[in-house]
Length: 196
Ligand SMILES: O=C(O)c1ccccc1NCC(=O)[C@H](O)[C@H](O)COP(=O)(O)O
Image (cartoon, rainbow, N blue to C red; front, top):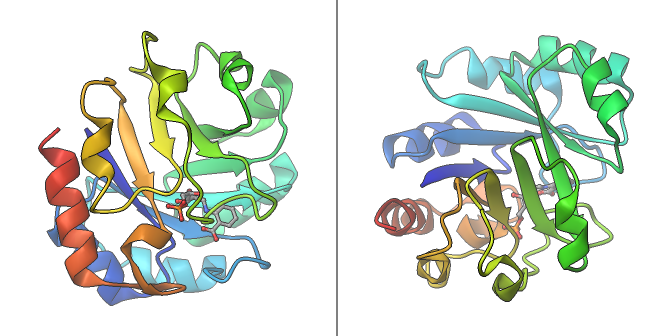
């Protein structure tokens, strides 16, 4: 399973995550987040990172024009879009896009059926809440295009076994404090997720 470590704010956390086996890193371009990083600061980190690791920018309620401008400024390779967007909005963004579904219930998952999407627990803060999703919603479904997020930790990630998710995403469950990673949690999370 692919693993994204989200909420990267500094070079050391980025490198430790990559060395532990992360497939993707997330940079939160949302000023109200405790993990906020400017596109310029993300660029300074990303320019020093090795290739073949996805650098994901997180956008909340931005226009396609803002997303493109910040994405290029930040040097990211994929835009993760937190918004109640439709297909037309996604098509208007001139950049590879990962739409986020904030799930309240099973029916929410039916949208974007032909795209890969990240499914997160519904919360006012848009993400990084540590709130869990109900895994029962995913039983008996094709989850091969779903990246599961929401309240995952090194201690519960093995519960994802058997669901066939494409990937998983974690933020607060690998932190020592908001915006600072705990290297031991990062290593343990990735090791267990990769064993599924
Ligand atoms: O992490 C944030 O602060 C954040 C703020 C605004 C929009 C999205 C945000 N994070 C999104 C993520 O992809 C998180 O990794 C995801 O919500 C899971 O978070 P957690 O439950 O803490 O593992």
